[in-house]
Length: 329
Ligand SMILES: O=CC(=O)O
Image (cartoon, rainbow, N blue to C red; front, side, top):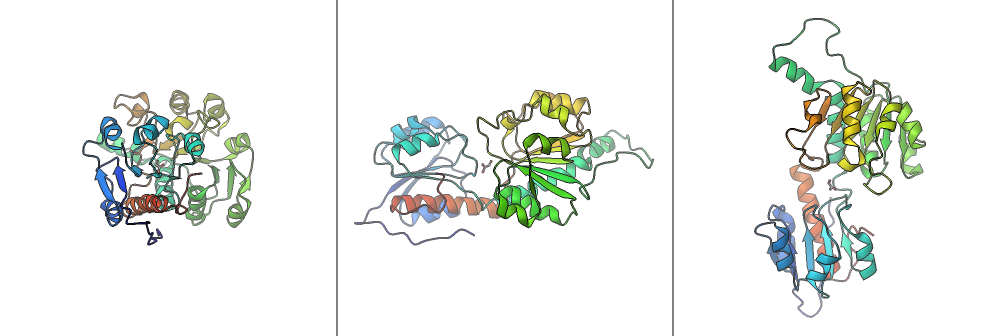
């Protein structure tokens, strides 16, 4: 649920706001329109953004394009606030916002459920071989024998969560009903939320070696870039399943290809890749144990509407000089 506050501007101020994408759910745009003059991008191009942000008071940055000092300079010194419509802000130069003391909003929390659902969906699809079984049917290769296309089970498994933030915790909540044997996690120590799920904080390599399922849901940073490389894959269980619902660059995709092809790990399910989209002739797409969705983590009607409202609310608060609903720093 997004808290909609009735913000007030001083002296009949009617701010100008630019929205960088014309596919932004209308609920957020309408909320802005109640108090602002809103210009919505027509072409979604970076050139149009650069041209039209000149002189605006707020920018709704609804794309994962680079957001840095060049953009802020192009807008001008009257700019009061920017909000993204995403939880991951690896494409934003946050230091530059801090340096300018410019409020930056983002949209966490409202997407925890939807992204956790995609994570669990990929776990099931990859461990129970959904795609592979479809391929077998398509090519008339159905085999009538008891040990055909056997998968791995979540029941009694050890689930390792890399990044126990809001989404990581929601995944643990979802999986509690699957009778998991143990949750491990690494990243930041989150004692309070971890206690609820008996999740144990362990060093990264311990999580890698012990887990039957590994779910990546940490931010992309200099420390996590290519965190999953050939050395890490060599330490994972042969029966393990890797899920990435965070950012593609956290996984070395060449190393993942080798690990899947050589059955060093059982399967992988990813909602994110590098680049996006993955080219249709990419080698990973030739593997039956590689599962992929098209960066759909938060892509449900309810969640995208909530994100749209939350980002708009961030902008309204920033324009009124009030604390943002969700500030990124
Ligand atoms: O990837 C999606 C997001 O960061 O919201």
